[in-house]
Amino acid sequence: MEMYIGFCQFSVCWGDKERNFKKVENLFLEIKEIKSLKIIVLPELFSCGYLFLDEKEVSKFAEKVEGETYYFLRHLAKNYNSIVAGGFLERDNNNFYNSALIVAPEGDYLLYRKIHLFKDEKDIFEKGNLKLNIFNYNNLKIGILICFDYFFPEAARTLAIKGAQIICHPSNLVLPYAPLITQVRALENHIFWILANRIGVEKRGDKELKFLGKSQIVSPKGEILMKAEDEEVLKVVKINTEEANNKKVTDKNDLFLDRRREFYEI
Ligand code: ACM
Image 1 (tube, helix red, strand yellow):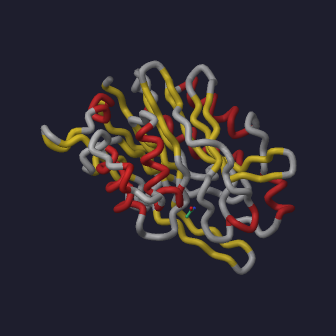
Image 2: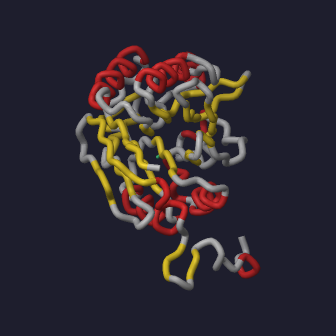
Image 3: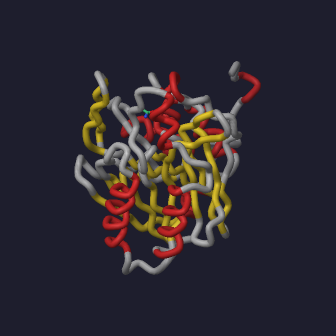
């Protein structure tokens, strides 16, 4: 299936959901003329920001799954005929998760909770406790990971084995490795990869983080189809999702069928 896929990269305003929603909606105007179905990925925790000093702050911005961020994503999905993925701070009873949603134009969705927590996230979030699942929409099979998950090849491989053609990757990158590693993840699994990072600096108490930008879309051959530097931008590229179904690297080698699981000790 031919379709556009893209990322929305911007500087998140800490603690200001309304302003972040406005920024994103302005960037979505870029694609208002594209009427066909698209997939657009927003950054990790795009609605509220990343650095939280204590549980009280986390609690203030946390939402149930079907909260403000879900309703905003559903609005974008419906109004721009898009499948939209993005991160939010989830509350489930007394637990907080670094979560993300993939939302379809009709409002159905898949919830994912980040399984590999990065650095100080370990102090405020629970580790994700949901299986790596695929969002099926018509003939599309879409997977999702959040930021630091890219460092663990098993996560992307699991989604690819489950049939993912495209991995959505909402991120708040601070280390420099993701552009390279996500290129490799796309190539080694023959899938498309949409890395959506944020930009800007967040300073909270004595903590300060600068986010990298460098969002990118990678093909199943590991080619960078589209990329950003450190600007606020929504970029799309046309792909054919069928390309992700072919796992052959030569006429005698198939990336999935040639696996030798009896030799892997993990
Ligand atoms: C990260 O996982 N936000 C680096």
